[in-house]
Image 1: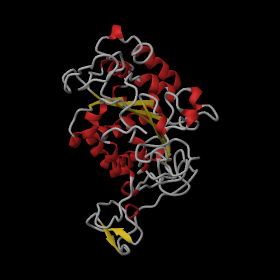
Image 2: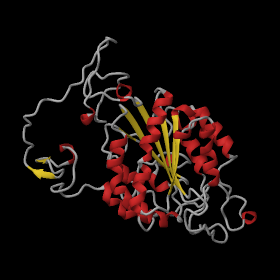
Image 3: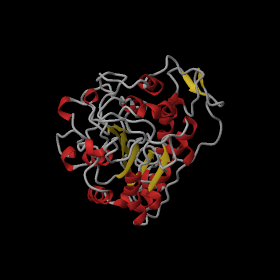
Image 4: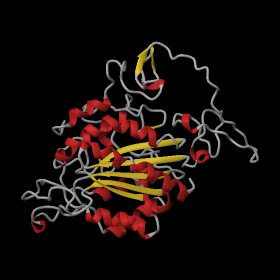
Length: 372
């Protein structure tokens, strides 16, 4: 097993602490058994006091279009097990009932080359807050899928038959090949029935794999009919009636970024040009139903200058993601400017989480434009 030097920091999100007593919380489910979330927002011992205040408005299920459904947004949760379209028959309202998508599929692509060690120094600590952020983002949709893949094949974290580009990871560096889901038969993605803490395990991708990053080839492979087919590696992840969000985390552009491209003709980046990437993705999922958020070097001076090392080895600094950004700008060209967001992966830890939080704004725009 090959681990990046910072892989073990993922224990912050992937492993359960011995006790949640005294830790921050927003509701009782964030605390261990025998504890509750008190008024100060921390886990306390004992049972929650029974409230004497007036009950919150309840959700009313109906098929009568003249009947109004009342929802208390303060109690809206992503834990609903209903696949409702406009209202739910059990639990709280979600999806279109509250102005968001019924379903969303989130594909996370992480650069797993050695040069990412520098960026992960700031990014990994930010993941301690990532689960709470996702919980906020995913409060609205009735159903979600979250899959993680890497710029290059990571055989340590994929089953033998799925050691191919675009296959979703089932393990991470913390578990050394064991399933992040606790069940080898579990699909290679999280859904609303899973513990979101498993995302920390999936994000531990290691940083010592092939240095020919092919970000868009990988995204397109992950969503391709070949990997989505019955019995294939990513079966069930991408749904026709779900919005699609793509989150890219990389410090290099999708191109030949070697010291001397003429001496490394096989280090090509993804096949084709940004326009072709956009057209191929649009053929899989309509642009109106797609959003893309990228953390990368979002300007020429965003990070330390990219310095490729001689030969086929990786470099230092971060390379301006010009071709990736050009691909994203095609959504702007269709009038879907709020379907994309680019942030700076070289930001300090305290600035990374707010940038990832823009995922919520992208999701809202996609939901509005797609009507899903």
